[in-house]
Image (cartoon, rainbow over all chains, first blue to last red; front, side, top):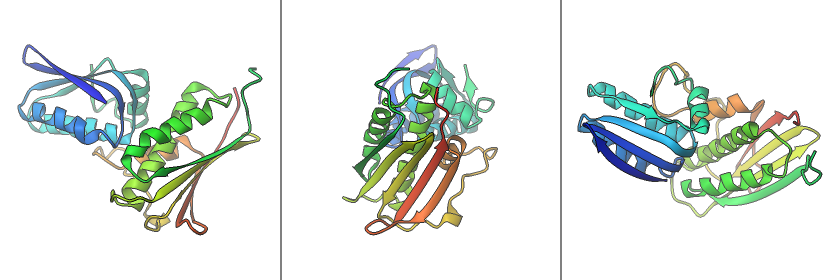
Length: 99
Length: 145
C-alpha cells in the first residue's frame, strides 16, 4: 500500500493505493488517525484500492468512530468496486459516510 | 468454453505464518482460480475467504507471535465441489469459540469469520493429523459459468 495526503480548504484528502490487509493496517492508521485527531475533515480516496479485507474495514470503522467522537467526519470517496462490495458485505453502507 | 480452463484442480502451497504472507496467499489463490472457469466476482470472494482464514491463523492460532512455522493451504475442485483446506501447528482451535461479532454491533474487528461464512457453504474445524494441530475445511458448491 502506498498513500498521498493533500490538503484542500481544511480538508485532508488521503489517496490510498494498492491492497489493504492486516499487514498494512497499522501504516494506514498512522496516516489517518493524526489527521482525525487534529479534528480535520478527512476524505479517504479509495479509487486505487483494489483489495480490502476485514482488517481494512476495521480501519474504516475505527476512523469513522474516532471522527464522530471528535466532532469531525471521514468521508469515503471514489470507492472502487471491489472495496464497495466488501463494505456492503459488512453491511456498513448506511453507517460509513460514502461520498 | 475455453479448452485451456480446468474444472478439476488440486493444488497446495506452504506459507510462513505471518501477516506478511497474506499477499502471497492471495497471489497463490488467484493463480489457482485463474485456471478455473468461474465468474470473476466469485473468484474475488473466494480469494477474500481464503485470505481471511489465513489471517485468522496468524491472529488466533498464533496470536500474532513471530514464528518460523508454516501453514499449508490446499485448494481442490472436483465435480463442482470446492474444498479449501488450511493446516497449521498453532494453538488448538476451540470450535465453540469461533464466532463473528453481531453484525449490527458496529465496531472494529470480528468480521473475518463473518465474511468466510457469507462466502462459503460450510466451515468445519477438525483436529489436524500429525504434524498438523488444526485443520480447517471450507467448502462451496460451485456452479460453473
